[in-house]
Length: 110
Length: 113
Image 1 (cartoon, rainbow over the protein chains, first blue to last red):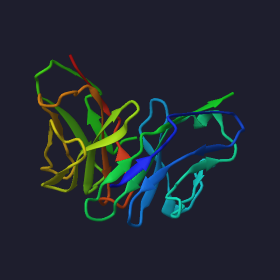
Image 2: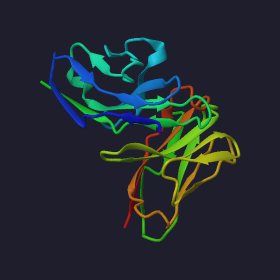
Image 3: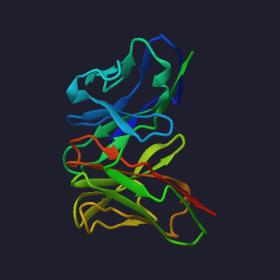
């Protein structure tokens, strides 16, 4: 069955420290993977998607098919990065579903 | 913001009553989705629709019903059969199903008393 796992419910780091939010997936096909972010009192919104291979707000994520991972990284955390982060898997055929992980709350401490 | 709206923001209902949550989008998106967001459980898919007059059950459809009579509207009814309806409900849309990012509404918090 398709599944997205985010092992950390809460990740606390100090400002300026590197950040890595983990995401592992199980899917036998070619995955479409996304990271969504929800800042306090704001809507859930797309942060980045793997096919874009771009850096948004200093965040990057690389798809590792061998390890079935799509970890989100940022070299230097900022206080404004504090938010809830969700990894999501999109199934582009058949059921056309999206599967979300349980989310990781990132707290960046001053 | 804009594009996808949900109403109301807060909703209170007595146990045993059906309640309908509104979701409207003016983005001309084909696909629409309903999720339930509970602490520690992420987003769980209730129902989704790839096109008008068609919809499929998600992972937790029991006790819920939907309709998709118009492209821009995808209302969710929480019935009395739903055992634990108090939750935060999110609606989303995407241009085509399964390929694009999803655009989310602001959510509706339903509390059943």
